[in-house]
Length: 357
Ligand SMILES: [Zn+2]
Image (tube, rainbow, N blue to C red; front, side, top):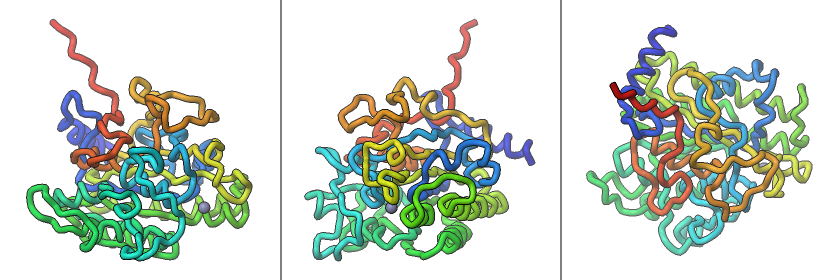
């Protein structure tokens, strides 16, 4: 098996041009773990977290950052889906963190922003990629109301794949159900797909019992619960010849938590703005540090230092996820986006220049 996996990986990488920053996959799963602090998946305890441990066998960092101006759930998820910051001239502008009103009462990104806000679902769906959102909080409906048959933009890319950009939208209550929906959907074998999965459990535990990362804490138990489902999802992918080696996973979080103690609203607190960004390229590979790999194109800043939206270049932020997912599908960047808009986030070491004879 290890020999086969290596061969498959080399085959995938051999399609990469000299200037390409990442290999290309048929399926990309973006996983957001609500309230996941990086320190809880770091250190010697991570052997108890086989799912997160596997996702760390690839390019990753435990010092990615949320949006610079907000460390709450919905604005940051909209940033992931649109690769825009929350605020500013290029921002998506969705600052609410509650169930959105109905579309006819202003509950779409377009109505809040004043013009259409394109998402990773638009770019993927318009090119024939099947899309899904499986979330454990109902307010994610903003991502469907904004992109459904009534509110989505016309598809002017090649074939008309329709105005609705999200083929499946499911709200579930438990981590187990989120995984069941995800594996059930993947088992249908869409030709190409983009799946956005959200697990809320750590955030719930943090609000109720604090972001206590000690062994045996309710917060750590909730992280373990999500890890179990991620490990199961990866086992399912490994076991399916139609999926094995063809699925990339991007895992991140909308915010950490703990400042103030039972919440995460202080956006300048490292406990809140530091989040993991783990990228798994279809098989367990060598772990590489994403910030070091991208030090020529993203800011390298101590994890305790707050960085505003105005810094150039920006540190690696979770808003890059939308364009990164498209990068891994071999698709162009989201129109109007700013985070990773050049799709230049390096995931693999560029090949060394050939020595001249
Ligand atoms: Zn929360």
